[in-house]
Image (cartoon, rainbow over all chains, first blue to last red; front, side, top):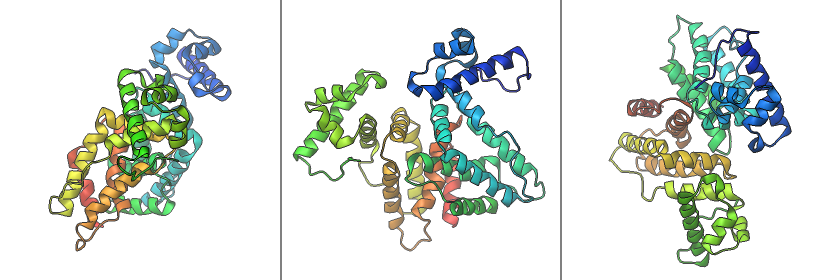
Length: 179
Length: 179
């Protein structure tokens, strides 16, 4: 799988990526998602379809990359001065983002793509940043936080009639902090 | 939404449902999922397309109903004699089923359908059956069990590189039983 991280800004590779991402976003705004194809994206981005296939593998991987780029946080998780506060701020923002229309689209694209784990690795990075701020606290593992905070949020949004409430998230944070 | 429960066995409505379900399953075995249509199913089942639209609403709801019917447990959850044992047996079976190809297809169909909550209501019924067996135990709520057992299982299958291990599920059960 060819999603590239840490591209040199301004390099040829980064320019191709930006152009393909922009073309994809524009086409998704103008057309039904199911009618957007790799040749359409390539034509609009001014690259060959084989450039896209070589770099992303297939359309679903490209859609997932574009969706993830949009959702990827452009800043560090909020620093409130306490582990509990940071986790609350993170969980509330995650709930907001995933309940939104772009969040739901992203979850769908990521599931259909050939990049399992990419999404979880972004979440893990954010949660690791938070727990690393409090070396003297009794800290839950990042995997435990994903099971207790991210999993119920996403599961309830996708499969239940109601997303979790903020109070439920706070209770799950207390449970995570107990261990 | 028109998924019917508790149909009178042998009644006209039950016969239509059985015929449409069978036609759908047969077509899904013979064709790409994306090429199966309501008129194809109707023709094979010997009903009119409008019968299907009236009863199920749309194709994705019908696919979800068929997938759920296949996954719906035909027996009570295993009774091992203890709450911990029953939860372990349930969680292990749920992990097995959801990791399978039919389980993954079901999750996809259910997400695309207009029946949010139907899937969770089946899970809740099973877990309620289990907790009702142990009125003298300190029992977690069914919602809590869904957040702590079903959610991490499904989230990890859909978004991570590895599903949870049986040991992780056991640890989550201990956490649920503590509260």
